[in-house]
Amino acid sequence: MNVAILISGRGSNMKNLVVASQSSNNNTQIVRVLSNRKGAPGIKIARDLGVVTETMENSTFENRNAFENRLTSVLEEAGAELICLAGFMHILGPDFVNHWHNRLINIHPSVLPAFKGLNTHQRVIEAGGRFSGCTVHFVRSGIDDGPIILQAITPVTTTDSVAALSERVLELEHQCYPLAVDWISKGLVSIVNERVVLEDASTHTNSLLTSPHWKHPVPGAAIK
Ligand code: GRF
Image (cartoon, rainbow, N blue to C red):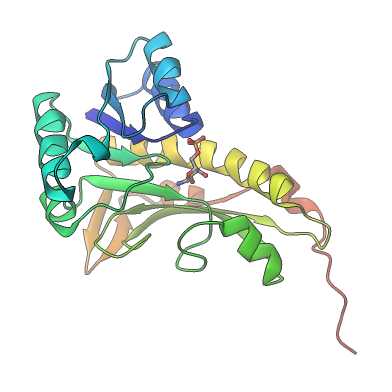
């Protein structure tokens, strides 16, 4: 399966997907890594891993449609069958999302549908959330919306900082994204009534990933 990855910055999820694609027993080829931001560190990482890269800045296009139409042309020319958003800081319009219906996935650093949008870890901590995690999902027109493929969770402690929580969630992201792409490439994922159905029982068992911190008791004072 030909996969393209869209990034805007660091690119750690992208790197993980590329490395997974280059391992044995893997059905995917990364045909393009594209950034909408000039100087995104992930572009150099992708290039060093031997992937064809491209930078296409939104600001150089007349409007959103012009940018997204060009994006579709580039991705189609590259032969992409699945598009993975990995820290792509651009809200895609309905035409693009509909064009790539069920062929466009995203990773978000929260247990969706909770905490959509930006500054997730800060908001989880401020809300006193007991758990956080990540979600890989098909993309629909709403922000961080769409059928959930895979989630993983980690406890949130009362002393957690944004940096510590985001580091633990990122560890989970790095497990989940390649696994979700692997399931899709093996034809194990279908969507029925806007819900993901996984092909065999073992994928269901795997679909609750937990962090190494899982065994720690969740702190939180009992209410008397
Ligand atoms: C990740 O936390 C991802 O969930 C979110 O943006 C961040 C991108 O990080 N959508 P990286 O560029 O993959 O390191």
